[in-house]
Length: 489
Image (cartoon, rainbow, N blue to C red):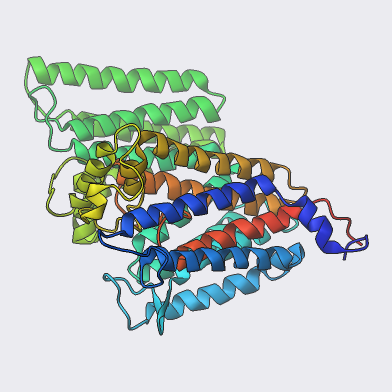
């Protein structure tokens, strides 16, 4: 309970109206984009419920009403029932795995008469609540393995269920929660390891078949193993007091590799990678000896990083060619430039790039985009809706939309940092992490910069599930923030 005459006026006065204003602006521009993407020459009524633009008004209206309902609930409701909400959504996700309805090869949709819902969109806010609840409990410490593993389980369980629904793109969104871990004290080396894995994969796969200076040495393998040596020495330099050892490791590894490369180029051509693997074994052995001698835990972690880096790199090719689905493999190859396939996997991205480029500086104007009106871009009102913004509003309109999203992200950071309790702060960072991931990946895949994984652009892509899901995420946080100054009794 709160002290005072009435709870709701205090809540309304405490609401962050700047964020609500940004939300309404994004909804407005999103509806205009859906109109542009779904409009067909000859349509006379864009407000008709028989059109996508008309139905989007329904989704927007219900989202605003839903947001109002979420604001009317007591902010402690979300803390108290976080696990209950999470458990209910997990059961729904699990049940969806056995859903008989397949839409575009995915079982992630529940069909209820004329209504189609995607539980994965709602599981995001439920997971965020459970994460905030668990990480804000008394005595929680992310550096304790027991606590960290339990935290990972909260994230990985819905991810597993969503993958079993054959909806890999939605499952990958949950990786955004690692940004929350970093804010709450997760060592930077863990986040760095994830970035390093991406670099190993991209460089190794992209340049695996390219030979170095007319030698039998693969450029991809050579560069990745050299990076493993450099990164390992850098971690010794950053996380241990033996800085001289770090410089020695770097000098020996780079020096031996350089000598081997020169010998291969000017004397007898051979695969320098074998020398690098030998250096890697010596480096790992050296780290183990030092770890046993000093009994410093960090040396064991750095040893695990070095071994894990090499294991990841050499397993990446197998995973790409034997584990991933054919369409996923083709998309990655197209993104890395290994395949062009403009009539297949690369068609969507190629057409969206044409649409965005044709918009120029100021765009072709509302409902005047030719690429989108002639339906050249598949999924142009859902996953690829940003190409409509680029074609009709041009560079200026696209930049304006991205500035709005940037304003939302910055505002969420501000709200998260002013929370008096860990629950609110953690949930706030979970929300902004989800939004950041969606915007970065969606815009990136439309521009051909990230893999096409099929996730919506918040408040722009057509559909009720994504719009409701993002509204849940945002307005629960706004309600938690609005209660920060209420006096509890």
